[in-house]
Length: 91
Image 1 (cartoon, helix red, strand yellow):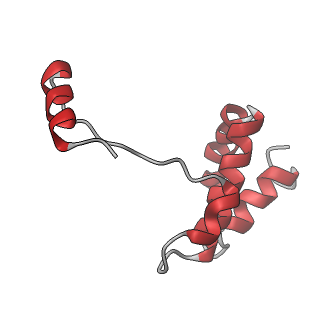
Image 2: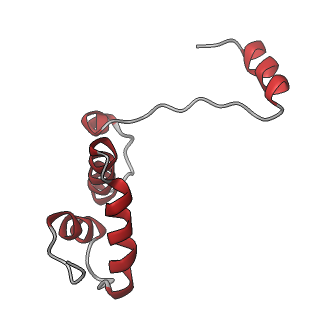
């Protein structure tokens, strides 16, 4: 952990606030805080996998196209899984 003085000096150098983020891999989702819906975790796992495989840009385009005709009663994770498996109207 960095000392507070280092954060302050870096903020002055860069002229903006400085923060630290930790990337959560799909394998470490078991330690996610309570209160996060399981559906959100499933969606995050799908997105993380697409990013790691390098296919996120095309996947995101499919999501945006398909969201226009999406059934809102459907769970978000089910919607993403259908796009991932290719069982949507745009394929």
